[in-house]
Length: 620
Image (cartoon, rainbow, N blue to C red):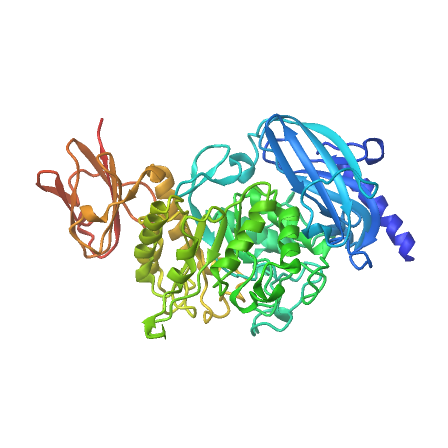
C-alpha cells in the first residue's frame, strides 16, 4: 500500500473507531478539538487537537521543539497539564509514527463545568524550557472550550471509584474520593514487566540471560486465560496475555505493581520509551499508547503504578546523572502521557547511586511539572554485610535517606533490606525520623532478602514464606509501613525476577500477603494506630495499637508475651495470618489476666507451632 493510501486508511479506521465508542465526543473540525471520555470524576478526559503535520523522526523534533500546554479551570481549581504529540491519534492500533494529532489527558477531581485553554508553542528545546504560557505570539495557536464532569461512577472499578492516591502529610497515602488510607500490597516482579513481546519496538537488547523466555521477552502465555471478553487489546487481539496478568493480580488482592519504565543497559535491557534504546529524545508513540492501555486497565482494577524511572546500572545514562535536557524530557513525557492516572508513585531510581543533590533536583523538576503532585519515592542501595567505607560499616539506607529528611518534594522511602530481620526496625526508624523532621514519610518496603532469594515460589525447596510473613510482611505493617512489594529472587528459575511468566507460581504467597492487608483493612483503624512494642515483655513479638482502645499483637510460633493495657473491659479475638479467614472469638483460649492492666498472651487453643495475631478491643 502506498504511504498516502495507508495514511488515508488509518484515518478512516480512526474515524470509524471513534464513532462507535460510548464516551462523549465532539467533532474536531467543528469545535477545534475532539473530546473523549466518560466525563465522570477521576476518569481520564482526552482532548485531541489538530496541529503541525510531523513525525517521530522529523528534523524539527516534535517531542523537544513543540510544547502543548493546557490550562484546566473549575472555580478555584486550576491545573496546568502538559500534552504530547500523538501521531494519527490512534497509534496503539495503527502503529503510526506520523500525523497531525496532539493530545492531552486530564483527570478531573471535581464535578461541574471545566474550562480549558490549550496552547501549542514551538521553539528550540521548548518542551523542557517553557512550562508557562508566554505573551501571545504568532508562532503559537490557542484553542478554548469546556466540558461538564458528573459525579463518580458508582460502578467504576478500582481507583476510578476511590480517587487519586494523595500524600496528606501523614504516614499513609489516602484515597481522595473515599478519604480512606491506602495500604499497599504490591507485586514486585518481574521488574521488566513492560518487556513484553506484543508492545511495538520492544526487543531484548542484551540483558541478563533468560533462557526460559522466547527471544528474551515476556509473553505471559499462562495468563491468556485470565483475559475476559470486553477487556482491552490492541491491533486485533494483541495484549491479551499482559491484560490477563493484570486481572490475575487484582483477583489475588494485589493493588500495586513495581516496574521499570526504562532499563537500558540494566538487568533486563528490554524496556524503554524511545524509538530505540540509544535514542533519548525521540519517543515511540505506538508503544507508549499500548503501555497506556495496560496502565488504564490496571487503574480500573485498583492496581497502582509504582514507576521506577531508572535502575542502579543505568542511572547515569541520561546526562551523566545530572538534571539535563534528556532527563527533563524523559520525565516530562512520562508525566504528560501517564500522569493522569489516579495511582502513581514516581520512583527516582532502583538501588540509587545518585547524590542527594541530584535526587532533589529530579524530585523538584517532577513536582514542578506534575499537575497532580503524585508522591515521589527513591529506592536505597542495598546494605552488604561486612563491607565498609573508610573503616566504618556501610549504611546505604542512611546515606540515601538522611539528606532527604524534611525535604518538601519527597514523600516515600522505598526500602530495600538484605537482612529481613531489619525490616521492622528500619520502618520504625524512618517513621520516627521523618516525623521529627516535620514531614512524615509514607514508608514502603519494596524489596527484601538476599538478591538471589527474595520471596520464593510456592514449590521451591527452600520455601521461605513463613519467615517472610513474620519478619517482612507483618514486621513491616506492625511497624507502621504503608506498603510492601514482593521481589522474586534472581536464582529462582524460571520464576525469577526477570523471567517470571506465570504469577500463579506464588499464589500461596499472594494469599498470605493479602490476608495481612485484609486484616488491617477490615479490623483495624490502622492509620490512627502506631507501634507500641514497649508494651510487650517479649522482644520477638510486635504490637500495633491505639492505646486504651485497640491493640493488635503478632505472636510468632512458640512464643508468649505479657501486654500492658489500659483500664476497662476488653474483648479478645485471634486471627490465623497463614490461613486468613474470620477472627476466632473464643473467650477462654490463649490469654489470661496476670496482674492489673496486664494480660498474658499465648497461642490460640494451644496451637504453639504456628503464628497468631491477637486483637484486643475496648468494650463500650
